[in-house]
Image 1 (cartoon, rainbow, N blue to C red):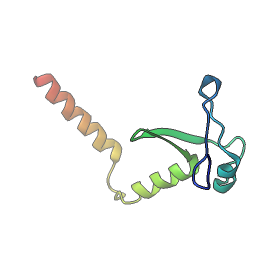
Image 2: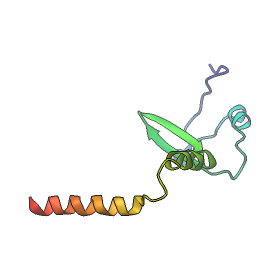
Image 3: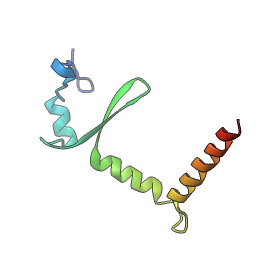
Image 4: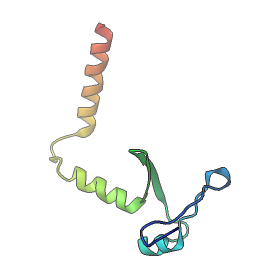
Length: 87
């Protein structure tokens, strides 16, 4: 039933999954490694923590150094609260 691109993974007690050895080797996943899990379009996506951090760094590298994302978020939240209080 399994081929080179698909493996069967059974959900065990307490929702536990075992990642097939071939995938662990291919991705360099070692015991104790932290993976981040998320749902995307009905699929379970597991990503290595380091890869997620690298993607985030790349995403925010384009933010100019004189821009404070924290200040922008606070301003957005205040505007939203102001609009809600006017209703």
